[in-house]
Image (cartoon, rainbow, N blue to C red; front, side, top):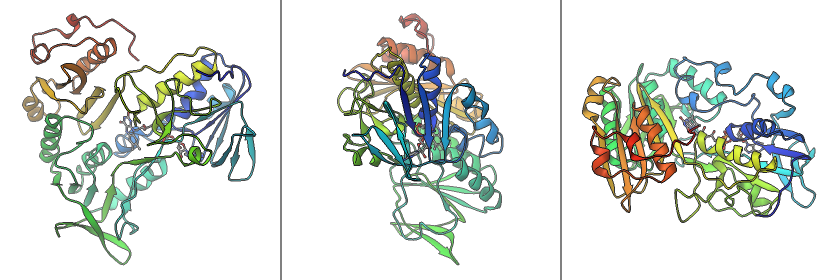
Length: 426
Ligand code: FAD
């Protein structure tokens, strides 16, 4: 690794989201005594995105609850927060970033925590009033208000955000989810888990159209009134939520000549092709010991936070390669899905517990887990309402200890006896 010493000097962090905020906080925790500037184009104090499609949407959390820290935190920790400022250019030769206002901010080390943006729906009518996306606090606030007035919703895309929205919206209005593949969360979970969630949503009244592609949003007087799919079907809706994946915000890096391929390419220390610049979180494509081969780009809180901690430790003089196990969660109604490891692709999956019981009891059936195997090795564990399985799975996967499919399926087998090292799990 080429040295990127900045244990003093100025660190400029671009992006005030999950990763950017964490770099600033961790630099101070690590004892970094240089200048820390946190610059982002959103006007708000740094906030968490996960509640936006869950408790914030249902009104169970307000804006104060989703904020990372109160405003006083930043002055108290010597973090210069520049909210509402867009970085338009990186001047690598001069080691400075240029803001939309024309002002330049010099850096000794630059951290790009730029996140990702929602993929737009590429069909006629996508600009009609009532067609919305969900990423920012502002969008969540607007969506909450629209939901109060909406009569019927269509969700385009059965990914995590679409399904979390469907779970919340179907409490009050009919919801149809339109998905191009043949099952929900197809890119992220096993067929068994997709099957379970499909059933659970259907029991709450959510309708699905699989293998269907939206070709047009229908509208009258500038307002959405429904969508049409490629097979000619029409689905009425005055609210259309689009959740069809994201595009990493990598243009700033590409324009500056940094390596970019499905995100900003970084090494195992999360350094870009310029050793004075690191990239973390949703925008970074990094090597992972849990996914041998091509670099991975992971969209999760764990990934952003652990990347941030890794870079902060390096800048404070304690470098160590990034080695954290990926893990993720989603909440859909009363169901909490937790995923440890990278389970896709896998060749074999075994179920521990009884999904049918969980389904019947709507969250009171004791939960279940799906253990996923590739090349005979445990690579991922998906758990529903079964937090202990999740915690133990993280220990197993971090230690590289494999339980056999037979052991995993045997509810009498104690996962703790499998020999996972008692490493600290954050
Ligand atoms: P972000 O938090 O997106 O922050 C990037 C910031 O950089 C943004 O504020 C962006 O505006 C800013 N920026 C970009 N370009 C510039 C520029 N040129 N100048 C200045 N600022 C710029 N993950 C989970 O693990 N569990 C969940 O349940 C979950 N739920 C989610 C629900 C929703 C609705 C969303 C949208 C995401 C959810 N995620 C969840 C994903 C998680 O929030 C992200 O993976 C995480 O926020 C990534 O952090 P980040 O710092 O990489 O990017």
